[in-house]
Image 1 (cartoon, rainbow, N blue to C red):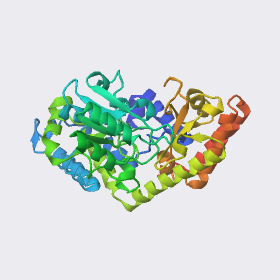
Image 2: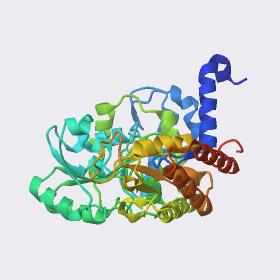
Image 3: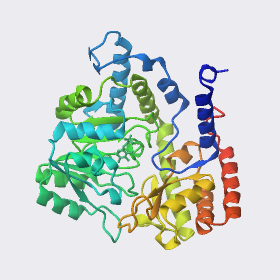
Image 4: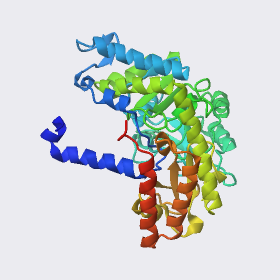
Length: 413
Ligand SMILES: *Cc1c(COP(=O)(O)O)cnc(C)c1O
């Protein structure tokens, strides 16, 4: 019996149930992934016991000798992997990484440009109930109606008109390449700070599957748990000149003690991300997304922007007579996990939404390839064209479980 099973059989059971859910179901949520055993071992270690407020060499507590080594290691690995001047690995999440940048360069009431949340922007880019929408004046930019690409002309016009303190390039639901060079050009013209948020595509960037923003941006924020496949957390890279202000905004500005066990796990994930295996993994993520997009197109689905350049696909369900919420619930009954998502110019509120967002990072981690993507496309089509046929849905659910059992996740290693 494990210590957890002995002390708290209830929580032990919940974790075992969740493990089984992850093993047996198809995870198509674009922001999710499966961290390695090595990452989880570091995260589940005695480092959780240590207070290390401050930074390496400048801690407020004694006994930080090993904490300094591990935080420096994480910083150095991130610096080398991304080619950045300065790195802070302490943000507890992607949203806090963004908050740290906002706090270091803006005052309350300042204006910034961010991607419209209904067009793919993230909550932390100006949602009215998020700090990013409450404290600052947000000017949203959008995608073009004809091709669903970012409307760079509109970004330039808005920048000239509003003279923002900062421009943010980054999204949570944008299936195409983001042209950081154009954003940098616009930011330079209006003398704005350029922040890029690569939370979704950080893994693609380090494997050269997406252009890097590092040469163009003043700040780059990211999560460490999406395509980067590390522990749940955040990170900020920036030009050297912003380093001291950024660091003091994170501690003591926003956070107390850093999560040293998570920082150790970030170091492990960053080492994994520097390997040739990680590059081929990201290659396969992108190939799988294209294969799944093509399969869905052949099944008659409409895709926002007509396809994908990265790891994610936005399916427009308006011509299928089913909302995003209904699609999410129906697929769930067939053991397929996705999330409902607004599509550009969506007539429905975000709680219903006209689309679903799907991604290939998680299924690719369990070694599925293009053949399996075609299969998944046909599963989704069967379910979404027969959303009230329980017989079909449970037959697909059985096929999904069989497929997953051929690609074991944690049970074997
Ligand atoms: C996921 C995401 C975040 C925030 O990550 P959390 O760790 O959930 O706070 C920030 N920005 C973008 C673009 C994201 O996709």
